[in-house]
Length: 247
Image (cartoon, rainbow, N blue to C red; front, side, top):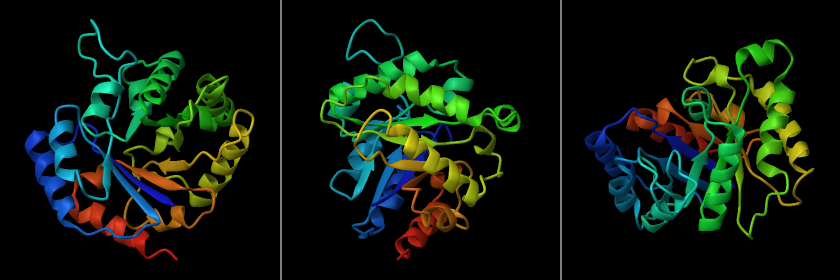
């Protein structure tokens, strides 16, 4: 199974999200070896989820609160998203960590909240350019993985990891596929320290129609988390079509 996940971030307003969702819903994606999921803004989530209802395209939030209900101004819980049709949830995206100051401890609580609700958390990890240049990439990733997976009770649920090097997100400086292959292999081995189950690992960071095949032909890369290229029909559909042709 190959996973094609589109993170719309804060690129699209409600009207633009509805237009794009309707355009994608008109496409026929029949490859049973591929799972497509869209992560719209909280503002557009209900509308987008309704549009994709009954299609092969899944939906999920870009972030979640860790409490089901209560006095948490601005928060939206996994339970609320689940009621609207969510299957997945992004947790710990680098922009949440580095722009909004989200901690490893907060990421862990959000992961547990998703599992308790029945959502599949997609845990985002990655290193900065400085950490990479200083040879601290494995140290940073090991710490992020440990904070999430150590003594984690999956409750019979599923979990995924998205490796997104911070220096490659939105910069056009995509990670070399051979380097991605190496680090994905390292992550898979690292995860064996915590669980026996197979955890899908996605690559994210300047994924485009012209490089997606280079990543998904690698056995260690189970899918891609696409940012800007997923917000336009003219780039996201060709990217999906390219993946459909992989033998």
